[in-house]
Length: 258
Image (cartoon, rainbow, N blue to C red; front, side, top):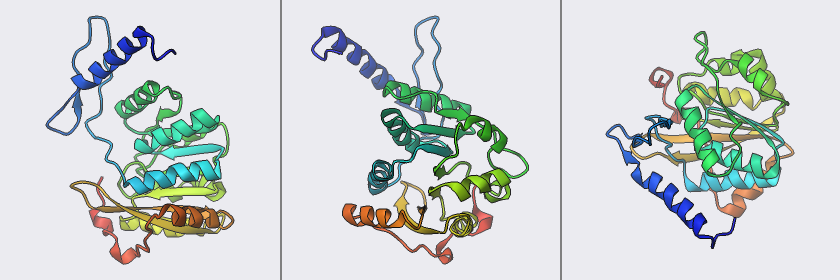
């Protein structure tokens, strides 16, 4: 594309106008103005992408660049999906991202499309009633390979299906890199402790972050022993602050949101 071509400028101006026309609703989502007759609008979900700390996004990008995962699985899409999608698209890697909200899947793919990224990465996967976690049979059907990178987020709840499902345990045991979000909740913190001993013996590097008008949160980066020196070097080089975050600081099980 020639950036000096007037048609390019007109196209960019039109897209900028579309974004400018969005207005925030009282619930914190966005209202999309009606389009021309015969066109369909993708409704943006009411929940918003609450961002983690800037140092975390820097570390995530650096980890992808340094460790070069080949096949990534993300359970629970969000802002991280765009980082992973950009890496997958531009480095010719595989990403499968799952989310239980169809509108969120549509919005994520729309944003990926606007950025020139692949739009076949984010998929709708329902939550199983029996354990409150993703339908792993559906996930198995989406994965073309055994992931060496897992980003585990998803529905808050207690995520009991995370370690009770045999296939999920198999995935966790085989991945070189496991990122577990929301370990400030006691049940998920205990899952982190179990994951450090499942399969490859791992070390957890914990990053805390604040969300506006919300509680303090934390996530854990768990890698196999041979990769831990790379994580330590990145954390030191980038000046990322890490935390011990013992279970005594966690929010008890009874207060985990659903």
